Length: 156
Ligand SMILES: [Zn+2]
Image (tube, rainbow, N blue to C red; front, side):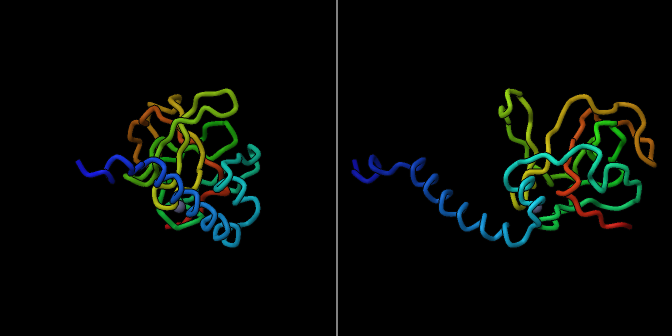
């Protein structure tokens, strides 16, 4: 039985790699993003409700990740949730990843950009199930609650 197999600790190796990556990444993002964007995208902050530029946006287009340009949401999926944050009932296929988030004494599902890992917002199960958007398709029942500062609308 080869000894090195017993000594190798994949968990330890992974976390040390991740640690180095983070230090490098955070410098990169600090230079690339505005302080407000950095606070939300990289430190998982939340912008003030009703203050974001896309809360009441109605234009047709695609909302991309402001950090890396990854297309995240179609304007067809946007609805007025009344929460003060841009809300969508679905993301573009493969655009976001979800993670369990138990911070602030709540159990929520965090959404991050599948390409760059930036924090975007949270997903809830109280979205619309009736007709939504210009095509009047039925909503998925999900509510993707997203910070405006994370988004960059490319109008059609
Ligand atoms: Zn991104």
